[in-house]
Image 1 (cartoon, rainbow, N blue to C red):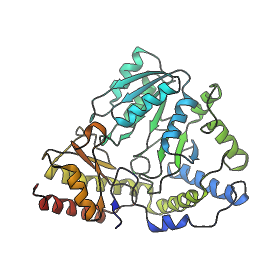
Image 2 (cartoon, rainbow, N blue to C red):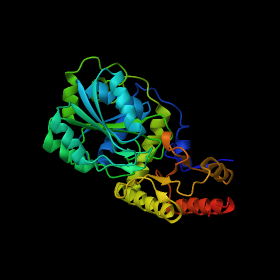
Image 3 (cartoon, rainbow, N blue to C red):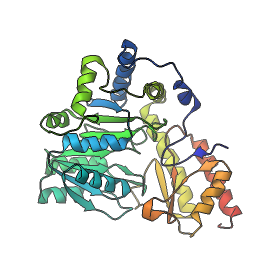
Image 4 (cartoon, helix red, strand yellow):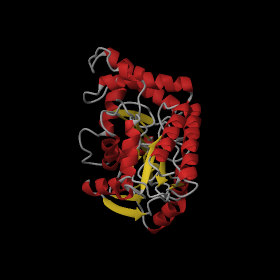
Length: 360
């Protein structure tokens, strides 16, 4: 039995998107591929109303964001660490030989603009890394205000953003918010199978990259841009089947309208959050709740693995808490192409399962 995936990722994928991957392959050095890739890149820029460079890598977003560190950080980076995935960027920065300051924030709390500004007043950093939507805790940090604080306090410092679980489900204004680079895997709010990632990069970040050595081979943004501008191709063999799927999905998103997509995600989040408040409590601090993932505090001390197992038998998959939050929280992913009716159905089944287990 297939379990419908209400996870923080991967998410449920519509059949037409899955089937689009079965089209016959084309050569990645062909005119047909160049037309496909150019359409994808320009549609991404159109949807986000940006003049930034757009890239699609055959990789998880982890590789792309490590690429940010290698390409855009000369020496010193500030990582705002408020969860497991922010901690990953601390580790990646260290492993790539950068001088790293980890600004540690209690899990469940958001990154605040004054935190960033205060640290930038103490020392100069080439870049600040922020996780927009921390999926381990369900916290959405105020990226617009953070970008403003960096611009006012240290205007030559880049803002590098992990937008893995926010991009395409939560508003993201690149130029307006002073974001220099942002990346996401498509298996989250894009509503796609995993395997490729989307990135946007500012012109000034690309200029800085020109003066940085040892950027590596595969995640070299200069090389990616060079191949795109020369012949609308990629330096290395891409996942063409997933690009077919992304091409179709971007057209579907255009038809829905990206603002309508953001609104639908907000409405799905409210349904899940209201359910959490009715039966348990929210884990993240109030006012900073994610619009794509609801992280629920286990205030009833239920046996989370048993609850998840019983949900699975009924055809639904949600996630346990992440890392140290395992069994203390559980999480619902409500992103991608889900409808409000599908979220309501999940919540009804969750309620009935809790009743059958004697927890409510």
